[in-house]
Amino acid sequence: MSHIIPTLLDCPGCGEACAAALFESLNGDRIAAQLDAILDGSFERTRCAACGLAFQPEHPMLFAMHSARLWIVMYPFEARIDHSELEPTVAEVLAHGFGEAPGVIGGELQAVRPRLVFGHYALAEAVRSARDAIDPPVLECAKLLAYQRSLSQLFVLGPVELVYEQREPAGDLGFGVRALANGERLGELRITGAILDDSARLRAAFELSHAELFERPYVSAVRYLLRAA
Image (cartoon, rainbow, N blue to C red; front, side):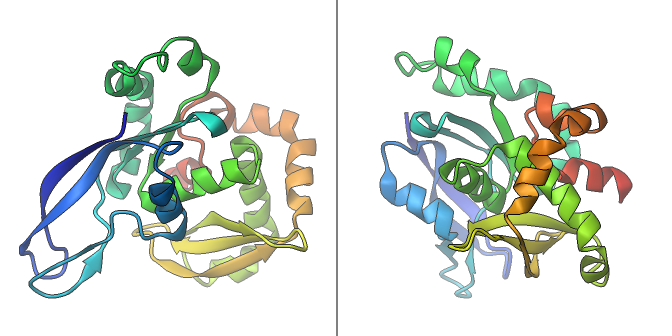
């Protein structure tokens, strides 16, 4: 099910053409090395032969990991402004991309909620939260609580998003703080793990106030931040 395509890219630094082999689809259960690369941020990292710049190409990709019940459509970071138009197509994209794989489409796909993410770090977050057994809507609602509780700390950085990066041994959650406009990592925020319990306790209220997080493929608090920006 994993499929790699040779690709010519324009270097974001100097504009010269760079050759790269990019995944069109990836089975995370079959290629452990690539799964590790997604988590550590080195996945598909490419270096320009002309200027030496290392960069991570943004491109559409299908990701599946049956053991973690993950079905993900990834689009480039810049496409997330169009998330409402892309959401209705997610199931069709998955069916088209994985339809030839025996036993994949059908009962399995219908039993799992497909995800829509934008950019490599969002894919890594989705895989990481599944690994750590954190329910995606609960995580996103916890981020909304974290914004409220850390407003003074985040306000000085301008419009930002929180990206889950790790659960520490003591139970605290580590979030990367990234610029909403371009995804640049500006810093980090540590929140007590009890915020997940608070989010789960308030789930019924969040399902009413933020229904999209529980019903649509783009399970991200960013959808509300983009609306407010």
